[in-house]
Image (cartoon, rainbow, N blue to C red; front, side, top):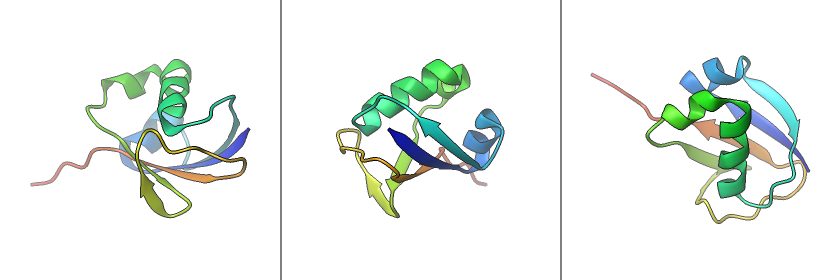
Length: 79
């Protein structure tokens, strides 16, 4: 299914752009994480990563649907 990825911070650096349309055979956020780690191995090094689907934070078991906007929110460091 086609998903519209929007990446911030280090996720944007890993993907190489802020917006990316992908066509993955995934049904949940957990499966999306696995696919992203296959396509972009650098994601495996991140301790935690959150996802917002259509502007709402969701857990790994959330079911994705075609054309969802998936915002990838990497861990935030501050000082």
